[in-house]
Length: 123
Image 1 (cartoon, rainbow, N blue to C red):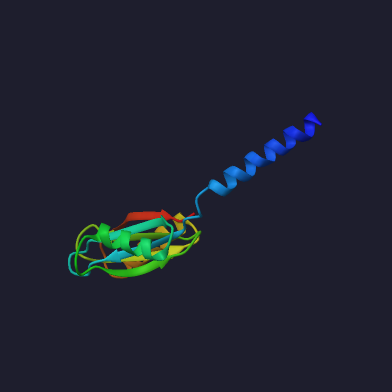
Image 2 (cartoon, rainbow, N blue to C red):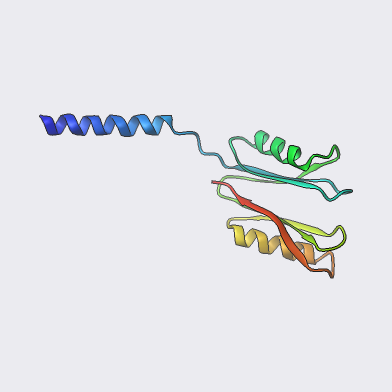
């Protein structure tokens, strides 16, 4: 009987902690201002609306626009040239793949060296 009581108590604890855990956050966005080159990148937000708002706040320019959105289990990255306004961005299933694709996209627009400016992944 004691064993059954312990098992029931353990199950109750597992159920209680599972029910109290937050919902999976997994939305992101990239906002960028074409004129100034400023950008904002968000990830792990509960909704796409929250992700868009966070990216726009981080970009902090009135003319920022959402460039792309990421879903759960996706990563996003933005790369920029050392000089000039050339940039590239990408989203992929892994952070390294997103970063490499962003650099490759940036390199299509400049002969300058591009490097990753920001990257992140959603849960």
